[in-house]
Length: 462
Image 1 (cartoon, one colour):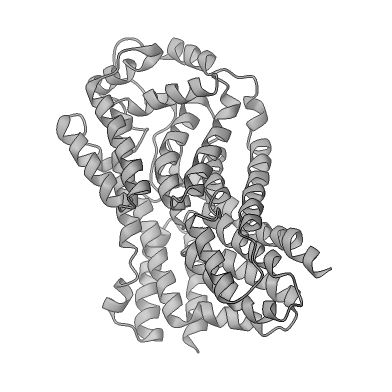
Image 2: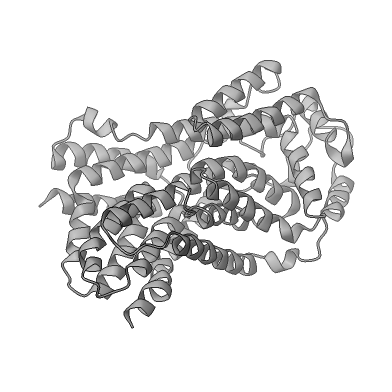
């Protein structure tokens, strides 16, 4: 049996086992990477570990550590109140503000994961505090990032436009950008309606804050977790404290109370805000690694109040780190085995440009749900070049469809963006939230490429 087939069967087995047994899929993926890599592909363990996503792992650790500290000292609540004022207290507008912020960030050149890493924790803080569906909020952030991600000065946009120009294909950078923006905007509108956005209309943040203040205990015992929800747990994690879900100590409760109703702002909160601004500037403007920057800022902040933040490391979503690291390591083995090229070549040999475009869109979507979207866009468009040069189908439409199909699936919990949303979710059952994101990503993978094909490719064929 060829390495390509063996690796595909192993991938199916991973999903099957993780679906029916409470075993972290990342652990299963590490085992599959070891067995398939060494026995079927002929890789050494050093070769396999070369695919370990160290940068992503550091990003997940650094960002969740930093925002655990920000949560504990009341800075997240402070940001929540400030952002609510920007929308006049209209809770229904908050998801759209988050969509717009991430779209602007990626549109001006930020990497999608960097923008999501900065905005998602704040957005999910809104969701916790004001009863917004966390799936709605998290997906609005991701689709906003992808909506702005194909501007002519963005990473995705530059990648696509360069490939198109190098292969002498008809190009329209503005069309690619606007098509992606409006496609993601349309998805966001559907999500807003389906995931409870209409119920938010007319609700005021001030009313929610007042009702919440009336319900919170004023004396005796430990205060409940902010928002009154259940503790956050990692996928397959052992019981323990987690971001936004652990009981507050008396010191933390005092810090949180100081941000309620326009109370005083503590020095530590000011320092945390400065740290968050520094994270945005250093990661977005100076292109420094967001993982190293975030963990450095987190350590500096922890030194100002070591006793308060001694449990912050336990609040890192370690099970999510295992999940993502294992799956992406196995994806690297798939690439080394030639599985991705094998599937792409099989699709290109079908002959019909219209059908090949649809299959390439699906291949891009499925693979990108687990691997680098930037890399997959390049592969998908490159595979489409031969029949696009024949002029039998509109090149711009196919490029748009492949670009959209390969990036909208970044909602997957196995992608960087989806992983960041999962890791920063607050006051939710982590297992349940993981399954919600996974279910939504399956819907996107199944339906998204087809709609993109119908909207952008078929009209160019007719």
